[in-house]
Every structure is written in structure tokens, then in C-alpha cells.
Image (spheres, rainbow over the protein chains, first blue to last red):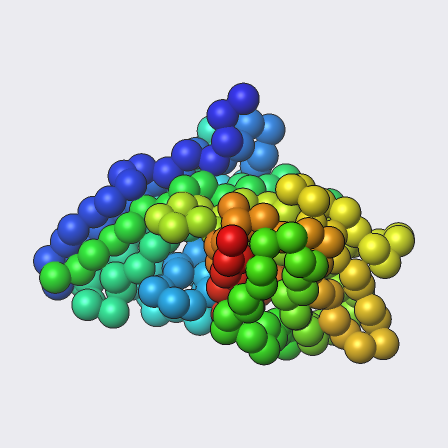
Length: 115
Length: 114
């Protein structure tokens, strides 16, 4: 049983470019959340997808957008990259929303470096 | 608003000694509490959770955590530390309502010396 898989593992982009990160949730999970972890900090919630819709959003600008596909996999897109977007991006999968969502499993992350 | 505080940036313990990593939280309603561990260049690994029930929760790798509602704390403990426990530990919380986003603390680096 595969856990949460993210691709790519590492990425280097130039300021101003756009990037797409991908996540496949754990088998049986239907909810995907994205987090940004800057160096030396805890993960910060970006947004959450369930039933192909964005359900919650953290304090991130509109440059950050996402998508969830019918097979529950998800993409995170970041436009007009800034140096400050350099971070480890983590995908978490879980089951359902609300009271039934009691545990999240994380992928290994994508290390994005903006130069 | 939900928040989590980990007051110690680093905790140093000798191998074989007990360890405690502190966490306090603030949330409206009943909290769901979690501990995760992160090894270098890796994602987060789930250790344990408190949803309801017994205040002492047992998790992976011999770790346990005690939920204290009056002190709004959820400290992580282990009776006998191993060098391999050295890693970055995150406490996290979400409220028990409809919102399921998880809020993380800033992390505590645990260093176990031989």
C-alpha cells in the first residue's frame, strides 16, 4: 500500500517563473492538503481540497492555486515565483472532512528553490 | 483562532534518560492534538494523536503524550531516550469542528547524546 507520494523531490526555478507540484494521496484517502515549510519553521497551511473543490485556505496569496482530480490526486501551482517561495512543500492526505478527519499522512515533500 | 506553542527550540537529553518535549495549545471547542517527527530532508511522520478518551496516549517508537485540559498542554514523553530519537518534533492541533486544517507549532529539535 503506497503512502503519500509527491513529485518532483527537488526543483530549481528562476524568479518570475511558474511551478507545478504533484501529490498522490494514500490509498483510500480523498482529502488533500498542502503545506509550506520554510527553513527552520513549522509547516504552514496553504489550502485543502475535497471532492475536487478548495474547501479551506490559509493566508497565502492568489499566486498559489491548486486542483484536485477525480482520482483524488492534486496539484499545487505557484505563479510569479519569488525568492521567498523557496521552501519544502508538503502534501497531506486524509479521509473526509470535519469530525471524521482525525489523521493526516504526509508525503516526503518537494524542495523548491527559487533563484 | 487555533494556535500551538512549543516553548523550547532545542531539548538535549542523555541516552537512556527520560525526555519531555513541551506543547501548549489554544483552540475553540474540543481539540484534536497530534505529534509528528521530521528527520533531515524528509516529510513528517505521524507519532500519535489525542481525539478523546484516556488522557495518556501511546504512540509509535515508545513515545507517549499526556493531554491536560486545565493546562491546555500536550507534552510528548519517552521513558528512555535513544540516539536515534534525535530529530525535529512538531506539535499540531485542529479543532473538533468542521474545519480540518492542522496548525503546527514551530518545532523542537531533540538531540540525544550517547
